[in-house]
Amino acid sequence: VGAHEHHVVEPGGELGATQFLGYDGTRADAAVRALLVDGERVERASIGAQVEVVLDRTPFYGESGGQIGDAGVLTTAGGARVRIDRTDKPVPDLFVHHGEVVAGAIAVGDTVDAQVDDARRDRVRANHSATHLLNHALKAVLGDHVAQKGSLVAPDRLRFDFAHFAPMTDAQVRDVEDRVNAEIRRNHDSQIEVLPIAAAKERGAVAMFGEKYGETVRVVRIGHDSLEFCGGTHVRRAGDIGLMKIVSEAGVAQGVRRIEAVTGAGALEYLRKLED
Image 1 (cartoon, rainbow, N blue to C red):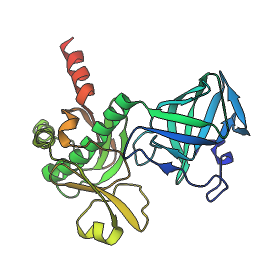
Image 2: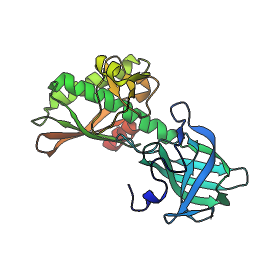
Image 3: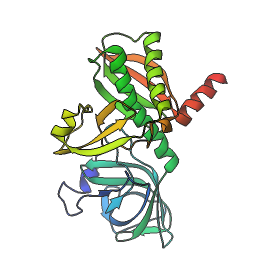
Image 4: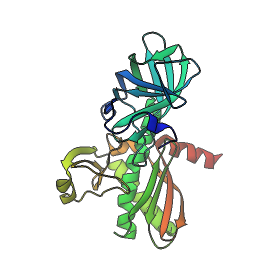
């Protein structure tokens, strides 16, 4: 939580929960519930202001579970335009959109057209779904002791930290890559269900590192076999990932290894860099 984000609202405060619409789409109408400039609540923010915006509902994913938040734009019928650079969740169920007013002025009570940057979201989605396939492939190649120790899902890459006692061999890295890419080519539909936590565990869903779970959990199946608890956004089919290429594997702490990888358009960019 940033230095001033606690000013926005305390859990259960008067703003209430933000309804998240981003699993179903990347655009929605929403009402402005609160504005902050320099950490202070304001009724109105004009062009040039660095602003934090709280809406009643949003298609923007708030950073959590290793997946970075969405970027995009908010516009009003009155001509205001706010460029959103990142979205976070300082407390559960409260989404805060950080950005700059680039045209007009936005006010509390305004209705905005909230539009997520689709191309960026697609890249994040591909990297997140590939992380699930990577986790599953690492267990298959290295053994069940592989446990996730952290992850970062960004538009340009994915980073995955896991418990393992030795550097991976080149053959192991290629085996993991082959398994993930074979799953991508199989192109199974992703399956997402919300289940009671006991039922999810019974199915063998893997809990993600550092996540807190309530009575019900969102369970995501990417490809044929990867089943995990996850609140993030994912591809509709495994084939949407396109290609996964591991770019590095290294130790980051005693007994913890880190893989960095690229997917889809990012993998193509990586291959072109190598070519150049």
